[in-house]
Length: 159
Image 1 (cartoon, rainbow, N blue to C red):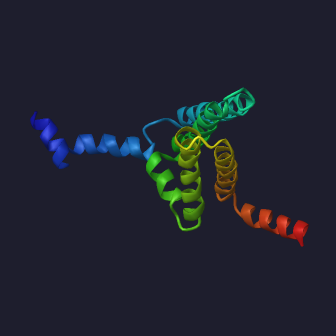
Image 2: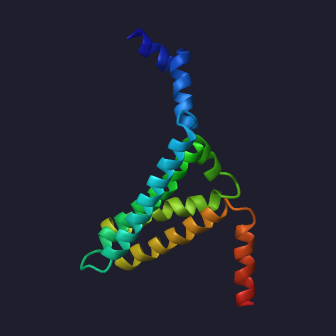
Image 3: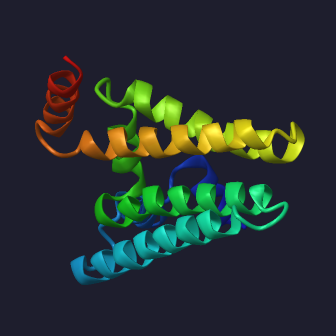
């Protein structure tokens, strides 16, 4: 009981070291982190594809919304294995990614609201499209100059 009190008060150095290792992501070997990244990312892709396939079933919009959203969450969570959850969250909310992160998280939530509570199929589909666009733009932010290249490509095609 005394050990629990020390942990809760932040006085147990051994417990804090373990917690910081887990949150930092450094307690796993590099190979383990890469394997779990791949597993999580592939599961995310499979969930998204399964959701897309379920869209065409009668009443499949709810299953589509759930699987597509879970797929995006799994793909996003996969990067926690590479850099650790705390570093991932810090990077997500950096000024260059702040707006797209908020749009992405809101579209994840609003997709489920539209499918389950509001019962609006078209709105759920729109939010899924917004999820895709936000996730793509978010992912491009990790590749140097990728967003600039995409913007330049679109402006040259439209202009």
